[in-house]
Image 1: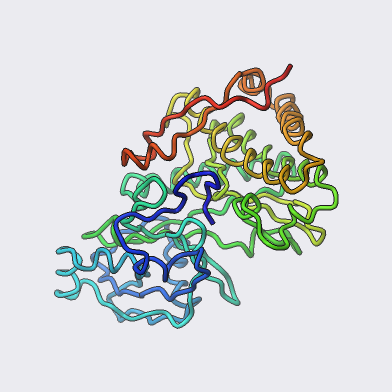
Image 2: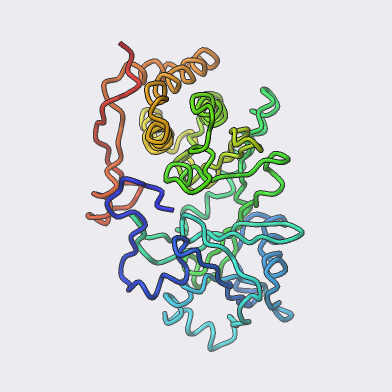
Length: 387
């Protein structure tokens, strides 16, 4: 649930009493309906083509919500965000002059996910994720769908989808990218009322496997396969074999940096609890070639994959299975060396010889109210360093 198990204030919400956000909090095991709005067609701003438009419209069907009248398009809204922005002049005037209609709540609920602003909509015929703006500082950043991120969404997502398709074609990998299909919003409240639709789990997860959030494995819960593994070393090697190669392959072959931290990765396990597949998500955090210098891109990859992700899951494994603790980092090193041999990435050799890893100053970001893009890093002793 926290995403940063060792952060002093993980998932801290700023600027509001607990009573305002508990109804929408994943840690409260809550469910809630979305509010369906009707947006006049001449006020619609959207991108993603027919697939995205159909997915936004499908939410009303999945959740059994009210449909818009003729001349309007469905615009799902997070009830908390609607409370936060409903009194703003541009939104208030749109309701008053009929550009925006409040159609009512959906009959069926959504489940908030670990990021709080993204919700899961399950349905008998299909499932979707929907990501909303929330004008609230959560952990470090204000969680708004910023215009500049939305406008580059399709370019980024298409590049990542192509990279995963190439990976599967060349290697037979079962790794999956949960595509961000597109968005819909109101021209007069572009960021405030935006909703982004993402692929659900049912079409991508391997048959018979159960997808688990990596953050949940790191934090632990009753019955977690990390805790119940009869062969923890074998479990860890399988985990690494599915999570690490896709991240390094996309960087080596396409220059793409996935934001492969704990909340953006799911690992599917079989009936024995063994990892059999990795799923990745969130185009907003992806960096493409040209977005930043290669050195900075590699630093971001190492922080997300190694420091935020593998260190947390590996640390949890060592805590639950002390006898396997000594093999956690040698196994990571072995997997990295295997990938280096396949891709010839010079950065991997440098990583394994470096005295320190980049650790993001998450708490400083919150204190200074800095944008996440302005993250700073401090050196962390490198457990991968060879003798």
